[in-house]
Amino acid sequence: MKNQSNPAILRPGTTIGSIDAENDDNFLFECFVKKYDLDELLDQNSPYSIILGRTGSGKTAIVKYILSCKEKSQEIDLADTFMNYIANSNIIKFLNDIGLDLSLLFQTLWKHILCVEYIKIKWNITQQQENNNFLTRILNKFSKEKGKLERIQNYLDMWGGDFWLETDEIVKNITQEYENKFEAELGVDIAKKVKISGKYDNKLKEEKKVDIKNRVQKIISSDQLKCLQNLIDLLAKESNDQRCIYLLIDKLDSNWVDIQIRFKLIKALIDVLNKFRSIEDFKILVAIREDVFEKTILETKDIDTQREKLESICFQLRWEEHELKEIVNKRIALLYKRKYSKDFISYDNIFIDKVGQKKSFDYLISKTFMRPRDIISFVNECLSISNGKTLISEKSIRIAETLYIKKRIQAIKEEWFSIYPELEEIIQLVQSFERNRLEIKDFIDKFDDAIITLTSLSYESYLINETKNYLNNISPLAPLLFTKHIIVCLFRVGLINVKNNNNYLHSNSNQGIISISEINENTSITLHPILQQRQK
Image (cartoon, rainbow, N blue to C red):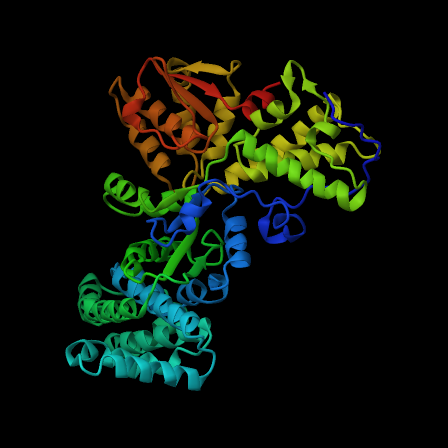
């Protein structure tokens, strides 16, 4: 039942905001829905350090909200600083290509940056004199503790004068310092050739590579990490829990960094986060997309242990239907207040009551992945289709649905490409079924076709490698094992729900991952509604 009439005629270009939080300032702050557990994320005593969610789940929106409401907060723009500079270093690329373990180097760089950012914010260091005042303060405070002071003296002598510089300058300086040391170990001839192209590893004999790794590894020692940890310990003594400093890191899913180095940098960042917990007034929050996080874990050897260890520091972004309805209502109310009417207008005032037998909002939500971006996108399509009308009809919703679903499926393929480059072919396989509810045997029946399709792809991925293994596997269990991998993939990206006996597993709930061991011959699968619609 409509609460009041809606006489306003929808104009061209009407939207309830951008699906991208970076371009959504017109709606984001006035319509921000504060999740009930957001205070726990912001609590400086909580273990949360990672804001984890899928594309469009609200990670960047939360980052922008924190920046707007917390006085002592700052975001590191990685695109212009750390990752971009590191990824463009031919010396570091070369060392990575010959198989040198760069984890200690990257951890050292992260610790250095995070320490400097904390110091700059806490003591408001923006110029050389303030930098000098801070150094004097530290030296005086620990003048009687010579042992502790000596452990950081070399670090302060080398880098203490740089604290007032911009982050990109600090990154450049410390990276160049390491590059110079690496070049000295490589020798003039090799260093010159590496700096020109970065691709010189294939011209070296294995014995030479081993020799280089052994010599360079001495530079990337644990001594620097220990020195930085001593600095962190000293900063912890200076900290208090009165006014928390929030350092925010976003945009780790950008495509501006070398793919080989990208995930090692992210892994190194994750590894050092807990080292700063002792600083009571410092909270580091890193926004990471789920697929990027998953790929980072896959790069480690002990996947299960790594995931379990990290779960406690991850703030999982999950939305309830009533929260998404609140987002839509707030945005529609603001839209109409600005453009059409001073009266309070909500979703129920401008949308038809039902689509088929379902309430219209329930219908819209069923086509989403329970994320703000999805519902905003769908509502925007409905508004666009309804140009010149006062009410969004069932017909308009169904037309908008087709446009919305096409974009969403393409977005899913792009979102998960780094892990599942074969996802487009898997989706085509699923869409070839005539039913929405499937059994394991339905997939097994298409085993041969799927094997041929996936092994013909030129991509490198875990699933494709497994597919090639099954090609030469004469075991009668091979089709079942292969099918399990396909189901794990589809569940992970949110395109199916799974039922084992009477136990339903929903991919868009907190059960975002399913293991192969949870799938058996009695498992049944239900396609997500966006795949059901595509079959018609």
